[in-house]
Image 1 (cartoon, rainbow, N blue to C red):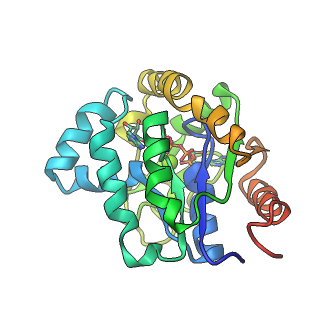
Image 2 (cartoon, rainbow, N blue to C red):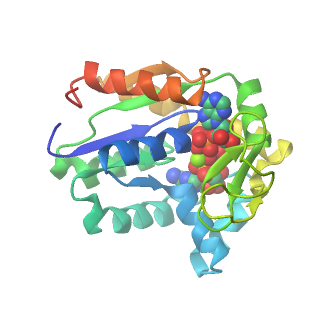
Image 3 (cartoon, helix red, strand yellow):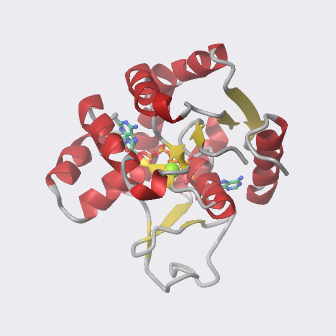
Length: 223
Ligand code: AP5
Ligand code: MG
């Protein structure tokens, strides 16, 4: 394995970025950095950042770059990121991408940008069926990865809830924002030779297997 590994997971909302990031986190002992999760944590704790983020998240819009970039800089300066990180939901536009390059260039830059490809209809099905544990944040799907007992987390017995921004009308705007602001990153990373697309429509375990073989094929990990 390289000394440091920085991965950027790309894909439409619902593609499975968070699900795969959590698997990679365990497999490589690297932290998952999900800007969406950090905003939701702040929202739950009613911090100023949470209150600011809520007004954008409720509409499916991006939180302003200055706030988001500072938050990521701070997160990356923590000691658990010394060996790298799995970026989930950041960068999300070209301004964030170039800020991220500056932040991590001194750490050897990005190793790979896996693009988890998924059709919009399937993304919508996944998002509207998603349930999240209120206490530990574990993610389920009512059909594709249901908990043993409906509404209850398998891990800590916490209550499962539906994210406020997972309603169909907000998801449609999140998809629009993705195509308008995030999809230009596909070209940005392709030009740098970092993009690696994979089929996100397979089941969760199979997507993980494909992702691991991509990482091996590109020399990011040694099997
Ligand atoms: P964020 O939390 O990042 O949401 P998102 O990008 O819209 O992505 P999702 O979390 O909806 O999807 P995912 O790809 O992680 O899918 P998951 O693995 O959960 O952002 C939320 C908001 O925060 C943004 O709208 C914005 O306001 C703000 N924000 C965040 N980052 C920002 C940034 N950088 N800049 C500015 N603002 C920012 O899977 C979805 C469901 O499918 C789950 O139920 C799962 O169990 C299921 N599933 C997963 N994989 C499979 C599979 N292979 N087969 C079947 N089911 C599957
Ligand atoms: Mg997510």
